[in-house]
Length: 210
Image (cartoon, rainbow, N blue to C red; front, side):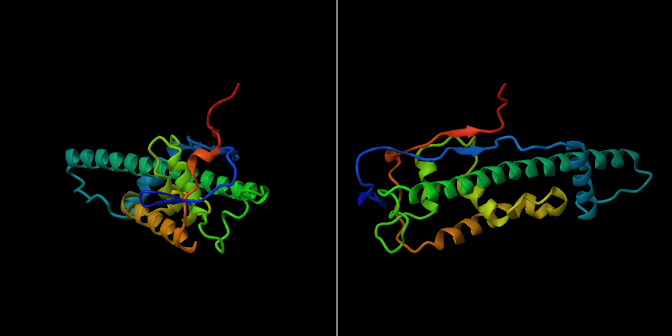
């Protein structure tokens, strides 16, 4: 076992670099009806009384309220699309981890590394750490939050099912709690996978291929 600072790394037999399955991710979520999403966001604003009403004769004030409502609707949609992007990253990582576990199980030199009765051992969360150690370009997406969001939602709920509080405030705590709980399910101590011993490709499924 190698120890670097406060990090422990599992010992991978041999000296070769192991090729792992590709990480397949959609970086641009499919949104077919943005106008419909804006309508739903406006309905959420009305239902949650996010903007105070104005007297019917206050035309200038009413115009200002409508502009404010439009700004809030745009903000809600932007928050939702950002979460959708995170969810797609988390979904891709969870599936990639599943494929990596299958790969580990088929290779003699790797199959014992995930067994908790062997120490040091890696866990499923070690693959998230591996992605971070390999400096995978996520365009600003925090992988732990992305994975936590995917753990919380098997499918991302439509915007009409999300409260304004969730979109603005609660999503970070929900995702963080889900990830920490998932992480703690593997008995400690969890060791990291040495990044120099593994290689994989990141494939952007959102890129058009002609």
